[in-house]
Image (cartoon, rainbow, N blue to C red; front, side, top):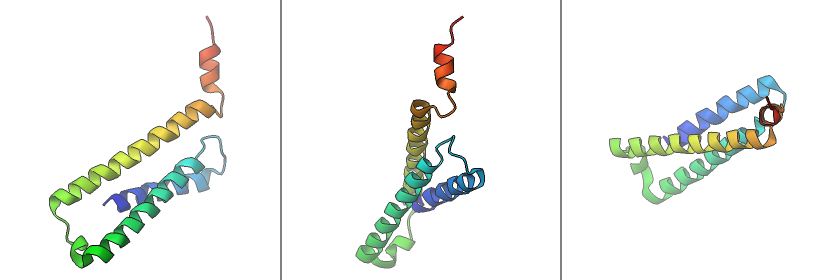
Length: 103
């Protein structure tokens, strides 16, 4: 479930990055983060399959909910890192303008 969630988010960010083709939102960073996480979960699934066999294809409801929660947490952390990066880099200069604007 974690693998599926991260792959879906990686595909979504990749499509948005490909269609926009400008770097003002730093879309390459979440693409790389989520594709890297997807690769990590894929390696984990293969290692678990080699260790446990076909039992990994019959998870319990508790395992599915734990994996889904982990996937959502990974996506949330990745989004937080992306937003903080946007705030620090400030590609459009909006944060700097809001901070330096005095009345």
